[in-house]
Image 1 (cartoon, rainbow, N blue to C red):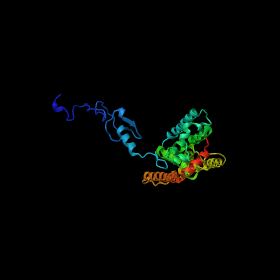
Image 2: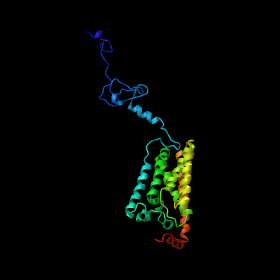
Image 3: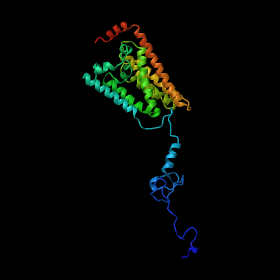
Length: 306
């Protein structure tokens, strides 16, 4: 064939060079992303609402789409992690005290229980770890089972709504709130132990969340009422329950009512305010007990003759 008869674009029937994948230069492909129109091999394409998109466009789309958020700004997730971890820690602490004491119902006789439960006199003298560790000690199997059952049911709902970080803040500040109320308003004769303050704080949190969601709160109110009334006929700390309930409810209310703009900043400020309040209660009570240390020691020995 003469060169004069060959068209400028090449011989008739000739195929243009096959493009290669934008991510894999060794893979020829005639497929393209419907979003960016770049060549892409089958491994680099994903089904989209219209056509197929490359993985780069899919990832960019995920970053640009705002994820669903709960009332307090936490990312929506069905995974519950903190609640079962807390239950495991409480059960583990109980098992250790049972092993030491040799009794599942009289485990408070163990050395670890005595060293970690909240005893006002010893706490005021500098053993401040007791305000935390006492929340993982329980007087017998029934005390543990009741608290863990409520923690399992209520904790899952609250953790999903608050998210892991906010949930942890509410739980532990409620625990400290129960200890602070019993320490500040209670007597030196009372030995405090149990997760009741933290659990009641979660019930206060759930009450606020369900109220905000316009859900029926009658069940929570009845459960809280029954538990508070039962404290009048047992040795449980009514102050500890109320302290946890108030702190958990108020802290959750502050998180829910925080404005969307700078929401995290407002929520952090609420947590800091709760910490300052509880620390002030502990400090004031410790100062008061320190001024009468000899009298307090004598009273404590009378309360705990063993």
